[in-house]
Length: 420
Ligand SMILES: *Cc1c(COP(=O)(O)O)cnc(C)c1O
Image (spheres, rainbow, N blue to C red):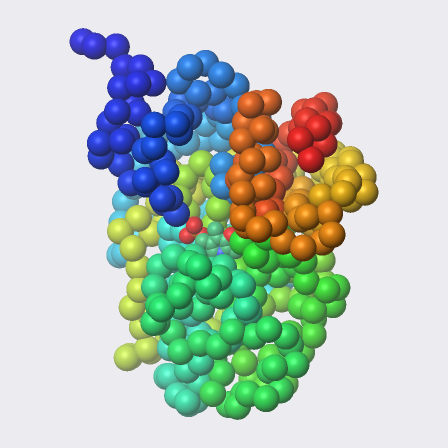
């Protein structure tokens, strides 16, 4: 048998693979050397040439406790000995029951007592959108069909989720939900609120919108507007969930609770594709009885391996000292990143918890002529130094796994400062 090498994998990749959000003409260009990631341990990724890199964007915002964590691995392996997957359509399973109970229990009693599983962030949003609109169809307010989202929001790539997305370069020309994009809260006042089914927001931080933070109090303000107008509120915590912002969920910062809360990315610790949409008893009851069924599901809904990984990941948050240690890391992250603001081409540092976007602009504050090139250049330099992340235009995202040690974090920030 021929020994497989980086070159054999890359040849197969160039011949057969098609990568997400990727201009394949650049990907396959002769001067581009893609990394082939072969294994991971803690915050480190190892490529097929044996080189080691710090996973500074948590493998696209998914990883929480580091790679190959012994306890998450053990939970997956133990589950694998029993069964990998069985249909959730027509059957219950132990891990899904335990996980639903656990997730609902992370919120105050009776706030979000119902859990619907799916596979990804996008599907978690599809579930919330379909539940919200169907709820009104069959509960006496059929005119409520519109979904309001925010400009520059990102909620995923399936058609329904993409139709409420507000990132022009990704979402242009898609039709799905009848939706409007808000630039500001005050635009809500001009709308016919009787036609609105739901408002959807990424609480605390718009991730894909170059890591932008909402003002303090915004979630509570939205919640009270929705209550007054009878509109349902959807929180997309796909990125912000599971400790990234310094609390388990971003909604906890303001103790504002939605009617639907969407979780994915970090739910399984970032190990397997798993998502959940949590909702209220009121919504659940609106689907009881003949002709009211929620006709929605996927082949892998309630996947037992994914649920086992999620339970193990959640158990790690309960380790003594977890939140105090996280606070120390966040303090260091905050301090060292904000020191960069004095540099001439660092336009702004936007940070919350262990999530940050560092935006580069010309020293006069104007955009660089070739927008996005600086972001790519910084990330290329970081790669040379053994750090992997991706830019969003000229904003470089730093979002390490929560398990990063203070020493690793310090090294990451020192190295980052050198390339600013
Ligand atoms: C990543 C992301 C999604 C989409 O999740 P996928 O798992 O990629 O489908 C939705 N919303 C937010 C806020 C995200 O960051």
